[in-house]
Image: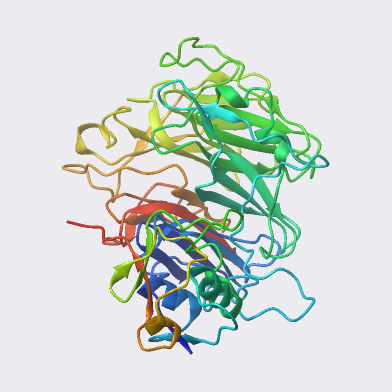
Length: 392
Length: 98
């Protein structure tokens, strides 16, 4: 029988919410890694039993956790036991060191700080883990300060894809309020050499050669909050989404504006249409309808909560511009939570399920593509990320 | 035998309960204690000091015999009481909260 597993990262631990295909009754497991910030938890598309988690702490730094049994047990790859003589490196699963080697790396230059001065690149944490579509041992990591790393040994060791950090515009990248984080990684299912990423606040980039070189793909974006609203880089992209059947069509929730590109990011145009506000963080695409898109409008860049205290998901069935509010089962008064950039996901069951988590600790699920909603849990710590595995 | 007390989150990460006991050959210093600790429990690598620079993480402090030795040289000998196992070497996370 089919089912779903919802992987939830929160400010104080991770939770796994499981249900059969009806998505009516849920089993809650957790907190896993209690007390730690769980920025992201994501399963491998190639092996649903394999799950990776980014566990961070201001005290103890970055930890990478891995499960090979669907989240029942976890290990720190390479850190389970003392290494055998002559064996691989120990305890390197949390070792994210920028590559400055002459052969494969780039010089460790500086990026722009909040006050406009230059600031050295410093690793802080992993924001996003994106497992390969085909290999359970290969995972991409988006980190702060912005860079991309890859493991090919199940997270025992990581190596930077330094061409991105070494992009010529690097010194102009500046941190968003939450830091200079690489938060979005989209793998093109039709082209293994093509990857899209997004950085707050540098913008979106694309590689067509497996990560060696990168192109800024921000033409068409307009951001009034930067000195040159049409600049090549500096845009605060919050999230990008695509449908696997049409990987050249991208949808973006920017700091302000919902955008669309029909040519792999080469040119964007605005599709905010009739949204009551086009600020927000999450954006996702229906599993079976490539023109059906979801956003959660947030009032403004300084008021991170829904308009009028009403939590509303907006759905477009036309690829943008025409949006309808989805409210059934969601609080329509006195609701002042936020929905962060990695906190929405869809399942692949016949009736597409949509899920999102809030900073108030609720995880809402809709088993009918957004028509109706109900909370799976109401009182978790603030939700940082939501991912879904569809189990057959 | 050197005794080490870890903060709760690091005990969980290393799958240990209570104090850790380590055998150290040669001089007993911050560096030799941390080297032995990380060799025994590889999952702790990077959690107390940087992987590359080996500098102490900002929110971590080291205490010996009720003295803060965080700012001492990592190669300075620790007190005899720690070297002989009479007193533990404490790894402490900075206090946070209100």
